[in-house]
Amino acid sequence: MADDQLIEIGYNYLVKHYKLNIIPYHRMSYIAKTGRGSTSIKNNQEIVVYPNSYALADANDVLQQLEFALKHEGIHLEVLAGCFSNISSAMITSFVKQKPTGKYARIIWFLYEWLTENKLTLPDVKNIPYVDILDPKKYYVGGDQKSKRHAVNNNLLGNKTFCPFVRKTAVLKKFERKNFSLMTKKLMSSVDPAVLMRATNYLYTKETKSSFGIEKINPDVKRTAQFIALLESASTIDRLDKKELIMLQNSIVEKAYRDIDYRNTQNYVGELTHLYTQKIHYISPKPTDLSALMENLLLCETKLFDSDVHPVVIAAILAFGFVFLHPFEDGNGRIHRFMIHYVLSKKKFTPDGIIFPVSAAMLKNIQAYDATLEIFSKPLMQAIERYDLSDDGVLNVMSETKIFYQYIDFTRFAEYLFECIELTINEYFKAELDFIVRYDKTKLSIQKIVDMPDIKIDRIIRCIAQNKGVLGTKMRRTYFSELSADKIGAIEAVVKREMLA
Figure 1 (tube, rainbow, N blue to C red):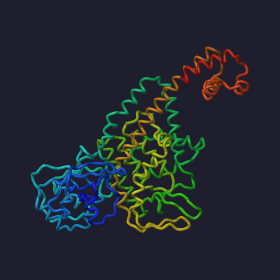
Figure 2 (cartoon, one colour):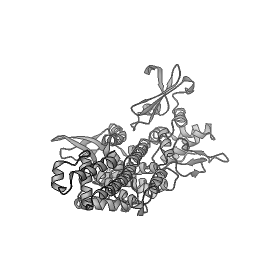
Figure 3 (cartoon, rainbow, N blue to C red):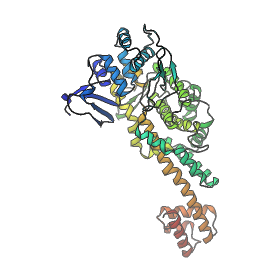
Figure 4 (tube, rainbow, N blue to C red):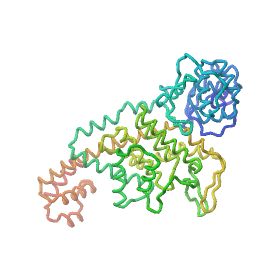
Protein backbone atom coordinates (compact mmCIF):
# COMPACT_ATOMS: atom_id res chain seq x y z
CA MET A 1 0.00 0.00 0.00
CA ALA A 2 1.35 3.45 -0.93
CA ASP A 3 2.58 5.66 1.91
CA ASP A 4 0.07 8.38 1.02
CA GLN A 5 -2.71 5.89 1.79
CA LEU A 6 -1.45 5.35 5.35
CA ILE A 7 -1.95 7.48 8.46
CA GLU A 8 0.32 7.12 11.50
CA ILE A 9 -1.44 6.05 14.68
CA GLY A 10 -0.53 5.19 18.27
CA TYR A 11 3.13 5.34 19.23
CA ASN A 12 4.09 6.03 15.61
CA TYR A 13 1.95 9.18 15.64
CA LEU A 14 3.12 10.31 19.10
CA VAL A 15 6.83 9.93 18.28
CA LYS A 16 6.45 12.10 15.16
CA HIS A 17 4.06 14.57 16.80
CA TYR A 18 6.39 15.31 19.72
CA LYS A 19 9.59 14.77 17.70
CA LEU A 20 10.78 12.19 20.23
CA ASN A 21 14.28 10.77 19.87
CA ILE A 22 13.84 7.16 20.93
CA ILE A 23 15.04 3.60 20.33
CA PRO A 24 12.48 2.40 17.74
CA TYR A 25 9.58 0.32 19.05
CA HIS A 26 9.08 -3.23 17.76
CA ARG A 27 5.92 -2.15 15.92
CA MET A 28 4.91 0.67 13.56
CA SER A 29 1.15 1.21 13.30
CA TYR A 30 -0.89 2.87 10.56
CA ILE A 31 -4.53 3.36 9.58
CA ALA A 32 -5.37 2.56 5.97
CA LYS A 33 -7.53 5.19 4.27
CA THR A 34 -9.13 2.41 2.23
CA GLY A 35 -8.95 -1.38 2.09
CA ARG A 36 -8.11 -4.06 4.57
CA GLY A 37 -5.50 -4.22 7.27
CA SER A 38 -2.22 -6.14 7.03
CA THR A 39 0.86 -7.15 8.99
CA SER A 40 4.38 -7.42 7.60
CA ILE A 41 7.97 -7.51 8.87
CA LYS A 42 10.60 -5.00 7.79
CA ASN A 43 14.06 -4.71 9.39
CA ASN A 44 12.95 -6.81 12.40
CA GLN A 45 10.01 -4.47 12.96
CA GLU A 46 6.31 -5.26 12.64
CA ILE A 47 4.43 -3.00 10.24
CA VAL A 48 0.78 -3.18 11.22
CA VAL A 49 -1.87 -1.54 9.06
CA TYR A 50 -5.35 -1.30 10.59
CA PRO A 51 -8.49 -0.88 8.49
CA ASN A 52 -10.21 2.52 8.54
CA SER A 53 -12.74 1.24 11.08
CA TYR A 54 -9.97 1.65 13.71
CA ALA A 55 -9.59 5.37 12.99
CA LEU A 56 -9.90 7.66 16.01
CA ALA A 57 -12.73 10.12 16.49
CA ASP A 58 -10.10 12.87 16.67
CA ALA A 59 -6.72 11.87 15.27
CA ASN A 60 -5.18 15.06 16.66
CA ASP A 61 -6.11 14.17 20.25
CA VAL A 62 -2.85 12.89 21.76
CA LEU A 63 -4.62 11.14 24.62
CA GLN A 64 -6.83 9.22 22.20
CA GLN A 65 -3.62 8.25 20.41
CA LEU A 66 -2.08 7.19 23.71
CA GLU A 67 -5.13 5.12 24.59
CA PHE A 68 -4.97 3.41 21.19
CA ALA A 69 -1.28 2.64 21.72
CA LEU A 70 -1.87 1.05 25.13
CA LYS A 71 -4.82 -0.96 23.83
CA HIS A 72 -3.27 -2.28 20.62
CA GLU A 73 0.52 -1.94 20.95
CA GLY A 74 1.35 -2.56 24.59
CA ILE A 75 3.62 -0.55 26.89
CA HIS A 76 6.50 1.59 25.63
CA LEU A 77 7.80 3.53 28.63
CA GLU A 78 10.36 5.47 26.61
CA VAL A 79 7.62 6.99 24.45
CA LEU A 80 5.32 7.45 27.43
CA ALA A 81 8.01 9.33 29.36
CA GLY A 82 8.55 11.59 26.35
CA CYS A 83 4.82 12.20 25.96
CA PHE A 84 4.29 12.97 29.63
CA SER A 85 7.00 15.62 29.51
CA ASN A 86 4.96 17.35 26.78
CA ILE A 87 1.38 16.74 27.97
CA SER A 88 0.16 18.98 30.80
CA SER A 89 -1.14 17.48 34.03
CA ALA A 90 -4.41 19.35 33.38
CA MET A 91 -4.90 17.43 30.11
CA ILE A 92 -4.28 14.10 31.82
CA THR A 93 -6.64 15.04 34.65
CA SER A 94 -9.40 16.06 32.23
CA PHE A 95 -8.99 12.84 30.24
CA VAL A 96 -9.25 10.64 33.35
CA LYS A 97 -12.30 12.56 34.63
CA GLN A 98 -14.12 11.79 31.39
CA LYS A 99 -13.82 8.03 32.04
CA PRO A 100 -12.63 7.57 35.64
CA THR A 101 -13.31 3.82 35.66
CA GLY A 102 -11.88 3.16 32.17
CA LYS A 103 -9.08 0.60 32.03
CA TYR A 104 -6.70 2.59 29.83
CA ALA A 105 -7.52 5.92 31.49
CA ARG A 106 -6.47 4.42 34.83
CA ILE A 107 -3.29 2.93 33.35
CA ILE A 108 -2.39 6.31 31.80
CA TRP A 109 -3.10 7.98 35.14
CA PHE A 110 -0.97 5.46 37.05
CA LEU A 111 1.95 5.61 34.62
CA TYR A 112 1.88 9.40 34.54
CA GLU A 113 2.18 9.63 38.33
CA TRP A 114 4.68 6.73 38.45
CA LEU A 115 7.02 8.17 35.82
CA THR A 116 6.75 11.88 36.67
CA GLU A 117 6.20 11.63 40.45
CA ASN A 118 3.57 14.34 39.95
CA LYS A 119 0.32 13.51 41.75
CA LEU A 120 -2.80 14.63 39.91
CA THR A 121 -5.69 16.34 41.68
CA LEU A 122 -7.94 13.32 41.36
CA PRO A 123 -9.65 11.28 44.08
CA ASP A 124 -8.75 7.63 44.52
CA VAL A 125 -11.03 5.22 42.70
CA LYS A 126 -13.31 3.01 44.77
CA ASN A 127 -14.91 -0.40 44.45
CA ILE A 128 -13.88 -1.32 40.92
CA PRO A 129 -11.90 -4.35 39.67
CA TYR A 130 -8.13 -4.02 39.37
CA VAL A 131 -6.50 -4.05 35.92
CA ASP A 132 -3.00 -5.22 34.94
CA ILE A 133 -0.43 -2.83 33.47
CA LEU A 134 0.92 -5.66 31.30
CA ASP A 135 -1.27 -8.34 29.77
CA PRO A 136 0.17 -11.64 31.14
CA LYS A 137 -0.84 -13.35 27.90
CA LYS A 138 1.39 -11.01 25.90
CA TYR A 139 4.26 -10.19 28.31
CA TYR A 140 6.38 -11.84 30.97
CA VAL A 141 5.27 -10.15 34.17
CA GLY A 142 6.47 -9.63 37.70
CA GLY A 143 4.52 -10.06 40.91
CA ASP A 144 1.59 -7.69 41.37
CA GLN A 145 2.13 -4.49 43.31
CA LYS A 146 -1.36 -3.17 43.82
CA SER A 147 -2.01 0.56 43.48
CA LYS A 148 -5.21 1.14 45.45
CA ARG A 149 -5.44 4.72 44.22
CA HIS A 150 -5.79 3.66 40.57
CA ALA A 151 -7.11 0.09 41.05
CA VAL A 152 -4.12 -1.05 38.97
CA ASN A 153 -1.85 -4.07 39.34
CA ASN A 154 1.71 -2.94 38.67
CA ASN A 155 3.13 -6.17 37.25
CA LEU A 156 6.09 -4.56 35.46
CA LEU A 157 9.43 -6.37 35.74
CA GLY A 158 11.30 -3.36 37.11
CA ASN A 159 10.92 0.18 38.33
CA LYS A 160 10.96 3.59 36.67
CA THR A 161 14.79 3.70 36.59
CA PHE A 162 15.28 0.28 34.99
CA CYS A 163 12.32 -1.65 33.62
CA PRO A 164 12.94 -4.43 31.07
CA PHE A 165 10.29 -5.87 28.75
CA VAL A 166 9.96 -9.31 27.16
CA ARG A 167 7.02 -10.14 24.92
CA LYS A 168 5.60 -13.67 24.85
CA THR A 169 6.30 -14.37 21.22
CA ALA A 170 5.43 -17.61 19.44
CA VAL A 171 9.15 -18.40 19.37
CA LEU A 172 9.52 -18.09 23.16
CA LYS A 173 6.37 -20.10 23.83
CA LYS A 174 7.67 -22.87 21.57
CA PHE A 175 11.02 -22.96 23.37
CA GLU A 176 9.32 -23.14 26.76
CA ARG A 177 7.29 -26.15 25.64
CA LYS A 178 10.51 -28.01 24.73
CA ASN A 179 11.45 -28.14 28.43
CA PHE A 180 15.22 -28.30 28.00
CA SER A 181 15.77 -28.73 31.73
CA LEU A 182 13.78 -31.97 31.81
CA MET A 183 15.45 -33.13 28.58
CA THR A 184 18.87 -32.69 30.19
CA LYS A 185 17.89 -34.59 33.33
CA LYS A 186 16.71 -37.52 31.20
CA LEU A 187 20.01 -37.52 29.33
CA MET A 188 21.94 -37.52 32.59
CA SER A 189 19.98 -40.46 33.96
CA SER A 190 20.73 -42.51 30.85
CA VAL A 191 24.52 -42.64 31.32
CA ASP A 192 26.99 -43.92 33.86
CA PRO A 193 27.89 -41.29 36.53
CA ALA A 194 31.58 -41.62 35.63
CA VAL A 195 30.81 -40.81 32.01
CA LEU A 196 28.70 -37.84 33.13
CA MET A 197 31.55 -36.50 35.27
CA ARG A 198 34.00 -36.66 32.36
CA ALA A 199 31.49 -34.93 30.07
CA THR A 200 30.93 -32.20 32.65
CA ASN A 201 34.66 -31.50 32.93
CA TYR A 202 34.80 -31.13 29.16
CA LEU A 203 31.79 -28.75 29.10
CA TYR A 204 33.25 -26.46 31.78
CA THR A 205 36.53 -26.29 29.89
CA LYS A 206 34.77 -25.66 26.58
CA GLU A 207 32.67 -22.85 28.08
CA THR A 208 35.75 -21.22 29.58
CA LYS A 209 37.87 -21.33 26.43
CA SER A 210 34.93 -20.19 24.28
CA SER A 211 34.11 -17.23 26.53
CA PHE A 212 37.71 -16.05 26.28
CA GLY A 213 37.73 -16.93 22.59
CA ILE A 214 34.85 -14.56 21.83
CA GLU A 215 37.19 -11.77 22.95
CA LYS A 216 40.10 -13.29 21.01
CA ILE A 217 41.96 -14.17 24.21
CA ASN A 218 43.89 -17.42 24.59
CA PRO A 219 44.02 -18.01 28.37
CA ASP A 220 46.90 -19.93 29.93
CA VAL A 221 46.33 -22.98 32.13
CA LYS A 222 46.10 -20.89 35.31
CA ARG A 223 43.49 -18.45 33.95
CA THR A 224 41.50 -21.33 32.49
CA ALA A 225 41.45 -23.12 35.84
CA GLN A 226 40.43 -19.91 37.65
CA PHE A 227 37.51 -19.29 35.30
CA ILE A 228 36.34 -22.91 35.55
CA ALA A 229 36.39 -22.57 39.35
CA LEU A 230 34.37 -19.37 39.00
CA LEU A 231 31.74 -21.10 36.85
CA GLU A 232 31.56 -24.00 39.31
CA SER A 233 30.90 -21.53 42.13
CA ALA A 234 27.95 -19.83 40.37
CA SER A 235 25.28 -21.64 42.37
CA THR A 236 26.94 -20.71 45.69
CA ILE A 237 26.50 -16.97 45.14
CA ASP A 238 23.44 -15.74 47.03
CA ARG A 239 22.68 -12.68 44.91
CA LEU A 240 24.85 -10.60 42.58
CA ASP A 241 25.28 -7.25 44.28
CA LYS A 242 27.81 -4.52 43.56
CA LYS A 243 30.43 -5.98 45.88
CA GLU A 244 30.09 -9.42 44.28
CA LEU A 245 30.35 -7.99 40.76
CA ILE A 246 33.55 -6.13 41.63
CA MET A 247 35.00 -9.35 43.09
CA LEU A 248 34.06 -11.15 39.88
CA GLN A 249 35.70 -8.49 37.75
CA ASN A 250 38.86 -8.64 39.84
CA SER A 251 39.03 -12.43 39.47
CA ILE A 252 38.90 -12.55 35.66
CA VAL A 253 41.06 -9.62 34.49
CA GLU A 254 44.77 -8.91 34.71
CA LYS A 255 45.83 -7.36 38.02
CA ALA A 256 46.59 -4.00 36.39
CA TYR A 257 42.98 -3.68 35.16
CA ARG A 258 41.11 -4.56 38.34
CA ASP A 259 38.47 -2.01 39.37
CA ILE A 260 37.48 -0.98 42.89
CA ASP A 261 34.19 0.57 41.77
CA TYR A 262 32.09 1.03 38.66
CA ARG A 263 33.92 2.96 35.96
CA ASN A 264 34.09 6.75 36.22
CA THR A 265 35.01 7.31 32.58
CA GLN A 266 32.99 7.14 29.37
CA ASN A 267 33.21 3.66 27.89
CA TYR A 268 32.65 2.64 24.29
CA VAL A 269 33.32 -0.19 21.85
CA GLY A 270 35.16 0.71 18.66
CA GLU A 271 37.80 -0.30 16.18
CA LEU A 272 40.65 1.45 14.43
CA THR A 273 39.89 1.97 10.74
CA HIS A 274 43.04 4.06 10.29
CA LEU A 275 45.95 5.03 12.53
CA TYR A 276 44.10 8.17 13.64
CA THR A 277 40.49 7.15 12.98
CA GLN A 278 38.14 5.01 15.07
CA LYS A 279 34.75 3.62 14.17
CA ILE A 280 32.48 3.54 17.23
CA HIS A 281 30.09 0.59 17.40
CA TYR A 282 28.60 1.11 20.84
CA ILE A 283 28.43 3.81 23.50
CA SER A 284 27.68 2.74 27.05
CA PRO A 285 25.88 4.92 29.63
CA LYS A 286 27.53 8.03 30.97
CA PRO A 287 29.41 7.50 34.25
CA THR A 288 26.99 9.94 35.92
CA ASP A 289 24.05 7.69 34.96
CA LEU A 290 25.73 4.35 35.56
CA SER A 291 25.37 3.90 39.33
CA ALA A 292 21.60 4.42 39.31
CA LEU A 293 21.16 2.11 36.32
CA MET A 294 23.28 -0.65 37.87
CA GLU A 295 21.60 -0.29 41.27
CA ASN A 296 18.19 -0.76 39.67
CA LEU A 297 19.33 -3.58 37.40
CA LEU A 298 20.30 -5.42 40.59
CA LEU A 299 16.95 -4.53 42.22
CA CYS A 300 15.35 -5.97 39.10
CA GLU A 301 17.34 -9.18 39.71
CA THR A 302 15.61 -9.62 43.07
CA LYS A 303 12.19 -8.98 41.56
CA LEU A 304 12.82 -11.41 38.70
CA PHE A 305 14.09 -14.16 41.01
CA ASP A 306 10.93 -13.84 43.09
CA SER A 307 8.70 -14.08 39.99
CA ASP A 308 7.48 -16.93 37.80
CA VAL A 309 9.41 -15.64 34.78
CA HIS A 310 11.22 -18.43 32.89
CA PRO A 311 14.89 -18.77 33.96
CA VAL A 312 16.20 -18.30 30.41
CA VAL A 313 14.24 -15.05 30.10
CA ILE A 314 15.66 -13.87 33.44
CA ALA A 315 19.17 -14.78 32.30
CA ALA A 316 18.72 -12.85 29.05
CA ILE A 317 17.49 -9.72 30.86
CA LEU A 318 20.23 -9.67 33.48
CA ALA A 319 23.16 -10.79 31.31
CA PHE A 320 22.42 -8.61 28.30
CA GLY A 321 21.28 -5.75 30.55
CA PHE A 322 24.64 -5.92 32.30
CA VAL A 323 26.69 -5.91 29.11
CA PHE A 324 24.73 -2.97 27.70
CA LEU A 325 25.46 -0.96 30.86
CA HIS A 326 29.15 -2.00 30.65
CA PRO A 327 29.99 -0.99 34.24
CA PHE A 328 33.70 -1.89 34.22
CA GLU A 329 36.69 -0.93 32.13
CA ASP A 330 37.49 -4.57 31.37
CA GLY A 331 35.87 -7.98 31.78
CA ASN A 332 32.27 -6.97 30.99
CA GLY A 333 31.82 -9.60 28.28
CA ARG A 334 33.02 -12.52 30.38
CA ILE A 335 30.91 -11.40 33.36
CA HIS A 336 27.93 -11.05 31.02
CA ARG A 337 28.32 -14.68 29.94
CA PHE A 338 29.03 -15.84 33.50
CA MET A 339 25.73 -14.25 34.57
CA ILE A 340 23.85 -16.55 32.19
CA HIS A 341 25.20 -19.58 34.07
CA TYR A 342 24.66 -17.92 37.43
CA VAL A 343 20.93 -17.41 36.71
CA LEU A 344 20.35 -20.83 35.14
CA SER A 345 22.12 -22.50 38.05
CA LYS A 346 20.35 -20.50 40.78
CA LYS A 347 16.94 -21.10 39.20
CA LYS A 348 17.73 -24.86 38.88
CA PHE A 349 17.26 -24.77 35.11
CA THR A 350 20.59 -26.52 34.75
CA PRO A 351 20.96 -29.59 36.99
CA ASP A 352 23.52 -29.38 39.80
CA GLY A 353 27.08 -29.60 38.51
CA ILE A 354 26.07 -29.25 34.85
CA ILE A 355 26.75 -26.32 32.52
CA PHE A 356 25.44 -25.51 29.06
CA PRO A 357 28.45 -24.03 27.17
CA VAL A 358 26.47 -21.18 25.59
CA SER A 359 29.68 -19.32 24.80
CA ALA A 360 30.64 -22.18 22.47
CA ALA A 361 27.37 -21.69 20.58
CA MET A 362 28.04 -17.95 20.42
CA LEU A 363 31.61 -18.47 19.22
CA LYS A 364 30.58 -21.06 16.63
CA ASN A 365 28.44 -18.41 14.91
CA ILE A 366 30.03 -15.20 16.10
CA GLN A 367 28.25 -13.26 13.34
CA ALA A 368 24.87 -14.21 14.85
CA TYR A 369 26.09 -13.16 18.32
CA ASP A 370 27.29 -9.81 16.99
CA ALA A 371 24.06 -9.33 15.03
CA THR A 372 22.05 -9.98 18.20
CA LEU A 373 24.01 -7.35 20.13
CA GLU A 374 23.46 -4.95 17.23
CA ILE A 375 19.69 -5.21 17.66
CA PHE A 376 20.24 -2.74 20.49
CA SER A 377 23.56 -1.10 19.59
CA LYS A 378 22.71 0.01 16.05
CA PRO A 379 19.51 1.96 16.86
CA LEU A 380 21.21 3.28 19.99
CA MET A 381 24.03 4.76 17.93
CA GLN A 382 21.47 6.40 15.66
CA ALA A 383 19.67 7.86 18.69
CA ILE A 384 22.78 9.34 20.37
CA GLU A 385 22.98 12.63 18.52
CA ARG A 386 25.99 14.43 19.96
CA TYR A 387 29.34 12.96 20.94
CA ASP A 388 32.97 13.69 20.21
CA LEU A 389 36.03 11.43 20.11
CA SER A 390 39.38 13.09 20.69
CA ASP A 391 42.56 12.10 18.86
CA ASP A 392 43.76 10.19 21.92
CA GLY A 393 40.56 8.15 22.11
CA VAL A 394 38.65 9.99 24.86
CA LEU A 395 34.89 10.03 24.19
CA ASN A 396 32.69 12.90 25.32
CA VAL A 397 28.92 12.37 25.07
CA MET A 398 26.99 15.64 25.02
CA SER A 399 23.48 14.18 24.55
CA GLU A 400 21.28 13.02 27.40
CA THR A 401 21.29 9.24 26.94
CA LYS A 402 20.10 7.63 30.19
CA ILE A 403 16.57 6.87 28.98
CA PHE A 404 17.89 4.72 26.11
CA TYR A 405 19.16 2.13 28.61
CA GLN A 406 16.18 2.21 30.99
CA TYR A 407 13.37 0.45 29.14
CA ILE A 408 15.01 -2.08 26.80
CA ASP A 409 12.92 -4.72 25.03
CA PHE A 410 14.87 -7.97 25.66
CA THR A 411 12.56 -10.22 23.63
CA ARG A 412 15.01 -11.02 20.85
CA PHE A 413 17.84 -11.59 23.36
CA ALA A 414 15.71 -14.18 25.18
CA GLU A 415 14.95 -15.92 21.89
CA TYR A 416 18.65 -15.93 20.99
CA LEU A 417 19.67 -17.36 24.37
CA PHE A 418 17.15 -20.18 23.99
CA GLU A 419 18.64 -20.89 20.54
CA CYS A 420 22.12 -21.11 22.05
CA ILE A 421 20.96 -23.44 24.83
CA GLU A 422 19.21 -25.75 22.37
CA LEU A 423 22.42 -25.94 20.33
CA THR A 424 24.56 -26.69 23.38
CA ILE A 425 22.28 -29.51 24.53
CA ASN A 426 22.05 -31.14 21.10
CA GLU A 427 25.53 -30.49 19.76
CA TYR A 428 27.76 -30.40 22.83
CA PHE A 429 26.11 -32.10 25.79
CA LYS A 430 24.49 -35.05 23.96
CA ALA A 431 27.40 -35.33 21.56
CA GLU A 432 30.00 -35.40 24.33
CA LEU A 433 28.12 -38.07 26.27
CA ASP A 434 27.87 -40.14 23.09
CA PHE A 435 31.54 -39.54 22.28
CA ILE A 436 32.73 -40.74 25.69
CA VAL A 437 30.61 -43.89 25.50
CA ARG A 438 31.91 -44.69 22.01
CA TYR A 439 35.50 -43.82 23.01
CA ASP A 440 35.40 -46.17 26.00
CA LYS A 441 33.97 -48.95 23.84
CA THR A 442 36.75 -48.36 21.31
CA LYS A 443 39.45 -48.59 23.98
CA LEU A 444 38.06 -51.85 25.32
CA SER A 445 37.99 -53.34 21.83
CA ILE A 446 41.60 -52.25 21.18
CA GLN A 447 42.75 -53.75 24.49
CA LYS A 448 41.39 -57.09 23.30
CA ILE A 449 43.58 -56.83 20.20
CA VAL A 450 46.73 -55.72 22.03
CA ASP A 451 47.33 -54.86 25.69
CA MET A 452 48.79 -51.35 25.34
CA PRO A 453 49.17 -48.60 27.96
CA ASP A 454 46.23 -46.16 28.06
CA ILE A 455 48.37 -43.29 26.78
CA LYS A 456 49.28 -45.27 23.64
CA ILE A 457 45.67 -46.33 23.08
CA ASP A 458 44.53 -42.70 23.32
CA ARG A 459 47.24 -41.68 20.85
CA ILE A 460 46.47 -44.36 18.28
CA ILE A 461 42.74 -43.61 18.38
CA ARG A 462 43.45 -39.89 17.89
CA CYS A 463 45.95 -40.52 15.07
CA ILE A 464 43.62 -42.85 13.16
CA ALA A 465 40.53 -40.66 13.67
CA GLN A 466 42.37 -37.51 12.53
CA ASN A 467 43.64 -39.34 9.42
CA LYS A 468 40.15 -40.54 8.39
CA GLY A 469 40.50 -44.10 9.61
CA VAL A 470 44.10 -44.88 8.63
CA LEU A 471 47.26 -44.79 10.75
CA GLY A 472 49.75 -42.69 8.83
CA THR A 473 53.17 -44.14 7.95
CA LYS A 474 55.07 -41.51 9.95
CA MET A 475 52.93 -42.07 13.07
CA ARG A 476 53.32 -45.84 12.71
CA ARG A 477 57.12 -45.61 12.54
CA THR A 478 57.43 -43.00 15.30
CA TYR A 479 55.03 -44.38 17.93
CA PHE A 480 53.80 -47.87 16.99
CA SER A 481 56.72 -49.70 15.32
CA GLU A 482 56.18 -52.66 17.68
CA LEU A 483 52.74 -53.41 16.19
CA SER A 484 52.29 -55.80 13.28
CA ALA A 485 50.40 -54.79 10.16
CA ASP A 486 47.58 -57.20 11.08
CA LYS A 487 47.10 -55.66 14.51
CA ILE A 488 47.19 -52.11 13.11
CA GLY A 489 44.61 -53.15 10.52
CA ALA A 490 42.36 -54.59 13.23
CA ILE A 491 42.70 -51.42 15.33
CA GLU A 492 41.91 -49.25 12.29
CA ALA A 493 38.75 -51.30 11.71
CA VAL A 494 37.63 -50.75 15.35
CA VAL A 495 38.19 -46.98 15.17
CA LYS A 496 36.30 -46.75 11.85
CA ARG A 497 33.38 -48.77 13.22
CA GLU A 498 33.07 -47.14 16.65
CA MET A 499 34.35 -43.58 16.16
CA LEU A 500 33.91 -42.65 12.51
CA ALA A 501 30.72 -44.43 11.48
